[in-house]
Length: 472
Image (tube, one colour):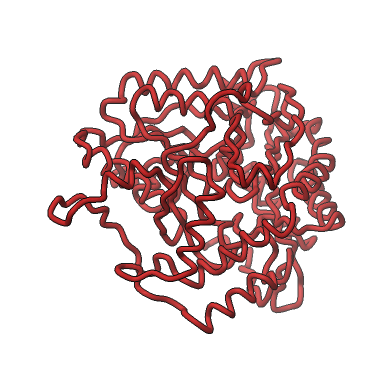
């Protein structure tokens, strides 16, 4: 808050499409989708109409002993879209709460099935899963968790498979994203060999560690992880809160693993041609992780939120398997019930917004449109890979990141206290573009509705901001 003594908060009075407007009439292109939630622009008429219609009928009702049509319809649609085998839905209200549900449900499943010793979790360094205590505990980003370490359970952390070249033990010259991700998986395999007997689940953000600096890795890691979890009898939780609903180029990021698309997703989305897989920091090739003959990839739990309602209202859900549901299905006297609830669980207005969002996906091939937008973003930003203070330009679908560094060749980042990213943020505001870097990582994660001209404005402003931020 002390920053705002010299960098005033911006009071926003309205929004439409990809634009925000303040009380002085200045407009800002929302290049970060208001914290990655807004998919189809602010106040999309179809979502607004759905919300108004729902408000005329039912605003909220207790979701214990009662139910309602929007929640039932949404659960059915989510299961139809999800990877195969995810047939049960548990509602929450925010992403962190969804992670809490998945963690608790995983342990409780093992308790109900006679293995109460499975109380620990394996997580990736540099990961982020939210800021409630359970979710924070399995996050591996010190910036968010260090102050609360005495309050947190202690998971087993393994090195991240992220392919950023700044890491001291990062990719070597000529090493591909896939080869590096395979090599890093050995760390997780060793952790499972040592700790599977006490581990309930492994939790990961699929393909992109968003709050940790938009660090990216190859889907082969997920393929290896699924097989290892099966071998060792450990659940797999994928946190699709930021990566779900088209952000990475498929409806869910875990669909990049070979053979993992659901039938509905396969009909809606043509296959993306493989991208470039240069080891020197480029757009990774994430076309397939195998030969297509293996069984479809599916986690045991999948957490979704953020874009689920198109950026209008808070809502989250955890999708899981029938076998996990059945472990709790018993008479009251068995005391196996999963007791987890929130006052606004399954809120009808939020469910209506989510249904409207999924209807928009069905009305137009947004994933194909996103591929064109992503290519335009890449073409505009890729030249920065030759900048003397850019370590890497990386992209996965509608997520593009530029990593600034003092001396990229020496793997030397800028000191955090120099706040180079903040300079980019300030420049963006001057030019009417909302950019909110993560430290020294300048990223673009815009709504899907940008016009080509708006894409150009966003990329040009980001590039100019980077030039200015690294000029001294």
